[in-house]
Length: 125
Image 1 (cartoon, rainbow, N blue to C red):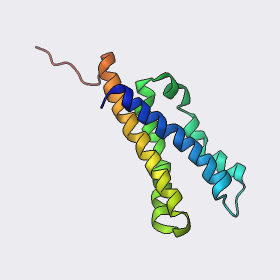
Image 2: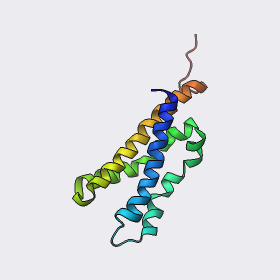
Image 3: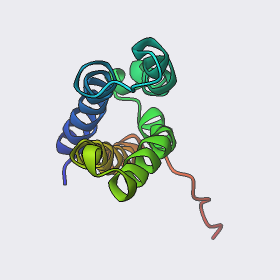
């Protein structure tokens, strides 16, 4: 995989998930007991935190943004298991989160190598 392809994959997953959360909770299947505004306030801010670094291509942002995906993986997995009515919505959420995860990890690794960034200590001779 190339750095360019990994970044494209990360951005497709990122913006896809951002759009999917808005569509799911705002249009396709709003929660029956909770307001659309409340649901979007719960689900959107986590995705908006890394937007500046994602757009600028910062490998550190791509690396730590994968931790922000955990609620979306958990939400999709639980609904996939428990709610037949929203199962297809959960599958799309999981696909987008996985796409972003894979793209971010590869981009952070490959771009970090290109920039000479490393967390390993150099061995003394």
